[in-house]
Image (cartoon, rainbow, N blue to C red; front, side, top):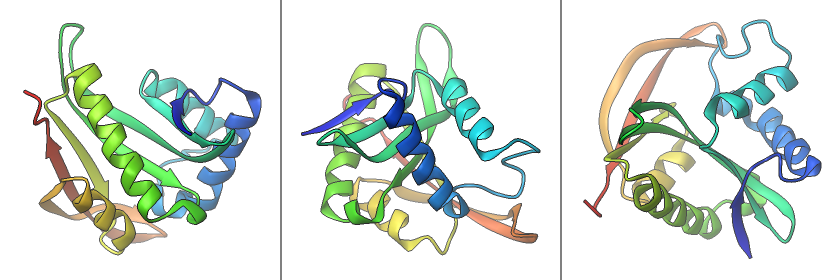
Length: 166
């Protein structure tokens, strides 16, 4: 059974999510992410900063991935948009991630009533782009030389999906 829960629900969930982050951070972050922090400190602070929008996805009591919303726009009355980041262990790529994406987006749109959810993706990350397109995201923009990654200027593609429940 797939569940979306907090990474602090069990200590092993945090450790498993941290392992995934460490394994796949080169696909998630730019050169500025850690900003002098250890990987542990950065990841722990990321979870705290994005609460209540950070979830681990579990399958049979094992973390299959994590997903969070960051850069939330809105106020205490209503939420307008947020930026999605997702990370799954390789053995769960494919139909499982597609299933989780649909469920998570429906959850966010129904529970929090977001108008829009965005995703920033490195152009070469075709797996995430395929997943986003499957989940209804459309490419909105190409942000040229948006950041530094591995010491080189890096473009970022912006994808978004709108709430169809409104």
